[in-house]
Image (cartoon, rainbow, N blue to C red):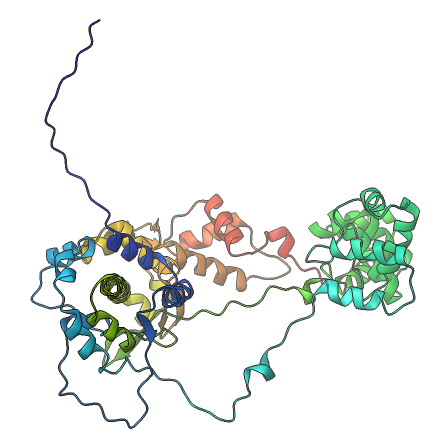
Length: 491
């Protein structure tokens, strides 16, 4: 087979991901907290950027000052009604680099630094405590146990063993691993010393801590409460599987006791905490700050961006003198100015996109805002993407980790997108609405005779919802609701 060199001409189309477009896509998919962190990092790396001083209440602003087109990146503007959807879609993925290069930076700085930053409302209250008075650290389970251990005179070896045991407890207070043999090898001692130290730590507060199993945890609490009679001990040691299923007849038959005696013992066990370390959990609450607000005014819903807490970016006036000089200084400042402008415009474009997506969601889910979750309709990303002439990937990025404050509460934008469940009349109902109906049905059941999943299917079918039993079980597990056998209450 012969080899030869040949030239040929080939034409192809490809989308070039410019740095500006990459930055816009990155900002679009960030959550609010991530965006705040990124802006703070950019302010450290880009000396041209600085946070503007907010306008004081009662301050008069001279509206006669000229403005520059480049300032549109800082101002909230609604889209031009004369602009077509196709042009808006093109703006989504295209950037005009020539416009950046043609900006008169001298005029931009002169006008931009004189303009006031975007105001935001921050209540002023001199009676509020300082951050030093409110900043606290919650004691962990390890700190609490170490404090108790060192309140007693112990040897260096005991301190080493106890520290290893305490530091290996899981968040619920259990010593699941390593086994005592491994602890003894690390502490360079024998297993008997470790077992002795473990038994002592198990007497600490909270009761049941440092147990190696649920059975041992309950037995420790029974002994600490003085309720360690034979029936309670045998149930905790040998019949936890029947206790979980509430099969009290089997326990009574095996222990040769009456069912009433078993009931009384179970009442005692129910007072014990199967997770003694949970009160010292270090899981801090996560507070959600909505990206947009939805207000109902005069029968119509309006979307308002949430600017509170976001840095008000502006261009530093200090670098105007550096821009006036020539050479490398001017080139450096121009690069930083260009980067700062793109960041400001990308943030503003992100805000406008979130508002457009939210307005489209309101249009599709108006019945939800008017009547409640029972009227939430099935919705997919493609519906919103076609409505606002954007790509599905853009809508997916916008709705991820973005939250909206509505008259019915705070929801993630993803909440409004649901798969559909068929009705018997041919229509569809959103999966979230079905979950709410399942929760309402279980909430109204007789606790001593809870309904099975199949019974729930029959009740939903009576309401015109055609659903499979396994789907009901899946939705029930997603909501954290136990099965009918575990929901049953005997007393």
